[in-house]
Image (cartoon, rainbow, N blue to C red; front, side):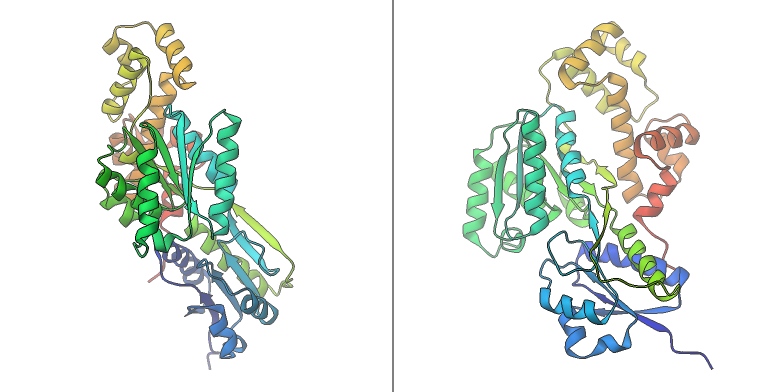
Length: 392
């Protein structure tokens, strides 16, 4: 007679972020274990109904309103892993995003494009958003840039339109920003709100205001026109690894300790779309070269092609590029191709060969080689992390 399958409690509320984490959890559980996944909307529901006695462990996906006391009680009764919070919660295992690395990537995204005016929008009552603001401001001040900052009381009240006063304040703030400002939003819902208000204000995106979000919400990023660039987080891998960690406590009889234990995950990188497709430059030669690269990077061009088009010497072009952007034309050309490849790997089902050709690479081998040099993994490995395989 078959024994009853083990059950894992997963505590979360529906959202694009939790969906991707759940895909990662399901990927590991369905492909490696004979466990059932049982969803709850709050950790207090598990404790209140005594359901914890039926489960081998619990994975809590932060919905920004964790009940600290309930989480403490749950952690005393079950091995518990929390995904997605950096705040001072009760001692438990936590899988978190490296917020400082996210801030550095956001700042680098705008600096690489020549921006000297930058802004941050977040929410004051969310821990990660507040910490992200601190890191962004620190990174910019190191470079002599004082950022514009807007901190709302909550994403829901601003982004979902429940507070006209907060929307009015955000509109007034956006209207006050100088042209050619790069705006980094703490998540894609805020980035989308910035996009909508910018359109109502008649602000051109990305030439007057460039917009960058976090989480790579396919729907919000894609329905905007131009589409919104976003920093992709390894949410699927975080869910996958949380389930794998739980397995070590259960299947391998490892001792579970309730002491604090962090696992930090770096962002997967920038998924560049239309909202940041701009470079702020004053030098006419560099501007012409950048425009040529942006319009032709998907073709078989190289630095010699740029020199021929502009009728300038390599030494002059490279010197002016370094003076304006701190990089060479070849770096800019590769950056455009790899950014496009990231977006295609996020949204397209094309073969690696066809994708490489669309990004201007002469062969799948060359595409794979350059992608791995820039990203640290092959295109196939990157795609697998983006969309984990869940067994039917």
